[in-house]
Image 1 (cartoon, rainbow, N blue to C red):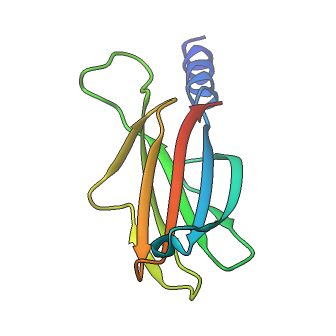
Image 2: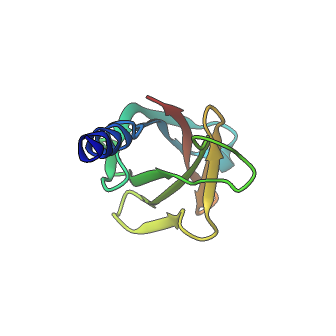
Length: 134
């Protein structure tokens, strides 16, 4: 009987792992220094497990490779509402222009963070990330 109870508890704890939903927007702005600009946007909502990466890519070649996982806070009791985002942002040429690994990009569920990269004072790439619980 004890073994059956332990097996049920283990099954429940593994089934209770929550997926993370990521709302991601890639925004590319061109012609910023000239007083006007052309903006292109790509929006995506995807679920991610701790061991998988998601790739969001625009037609012009700009892309973001992102992973996310829950981080347990010492100040919270119960399930964490704190998510750590890791990944890379690539420009049109396929070169990594931003890495979100260091310093750590930590976001509470429901909050939004924006990362901006500017190239040649004329082009700007923004990535807007909002983690949600699924």
